Image (cartoon, rainbow, N blue to C red; front, side, top):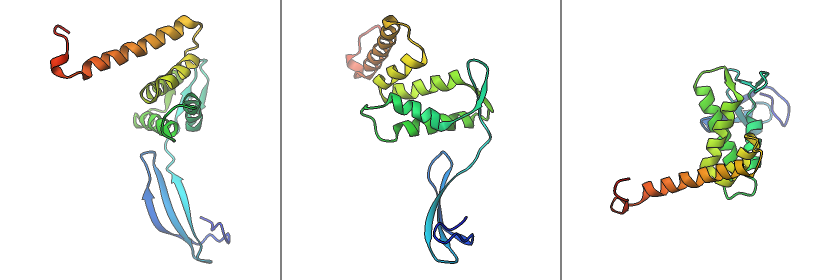
Amino acid sequence: MRCPACGQGDTRVVDSRDLDEAATIRRRRECGACGTRFTTYERIESARLVVVKRDGTRQEFDRDKLANGLRKALTRRPVPDGAADQAADEIEAELRSEGMTEVQSSRIGLMAMAKLRELDQIAYIRFASVYQSFEGIEDLKREVDALIDDRDAIALDLRPEGSKRRGT
């Protein structure tokens, strides 16, 4: 690793820490020539993951492309900063943990929709309307109705035991 101050290649690692489950390592380094300390972030390169598109073409998985799509859906929504990046990291980690070298783009889209559904329902609808190519208001209504039905089902399950209707 070259020193950013003097350009010498004689640096040593002073401290090293794992940052997250996406295999990022933070290293504090010190230049042996000028004594400058600097930080590097290293991501362990794993096996290549190829995405098979709907038309049959293949391209390398691009985590940034996924994160940008999630970010667009989450624009101006009340979610924590970095939620899109965290969701993209979780999707990538899940795909890589399966040990597959190829994945269908439709699977990534479904995983993205599931993450958005957990994060924010409006962002989910935004993403779903583009991803699923809603052709009319009926498609949008059907998806919103499904969200409402899911919310109502969850609300029924969360009621205290004594207040649940008998026979359900």
